[in-house]
Length: 120
Image (cartoon, rainbow, N blue to C red; front, side):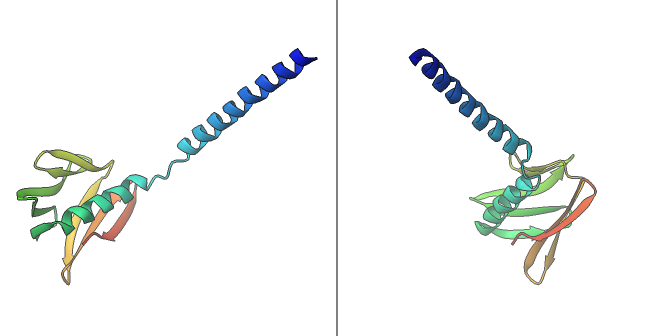
């Protein structure tokens, strides 16, 4: 009788571990598609907040960031920070920047959808 209870307890612990693993896998497959864009916008806002002499052109942003001249540009299907090659956003078809009343906006196209957001 004790052996049966012990094996039942071990089986229930293994099943609980499997259920937790399955729930974690399910959450990872339902990952927010906009998560990368949200993180890129946060990074871009932080870079711009710590920068000076920001120059806005339709195809790029140029600025002095931590005493170095950097640019934010589209390279192939990525938004990157150059003075190096830090990828901020991937799988974008087009990106453009606009300055409207001392505020900087970014417009990008991804998977057929167009997004427009204030970044500074």
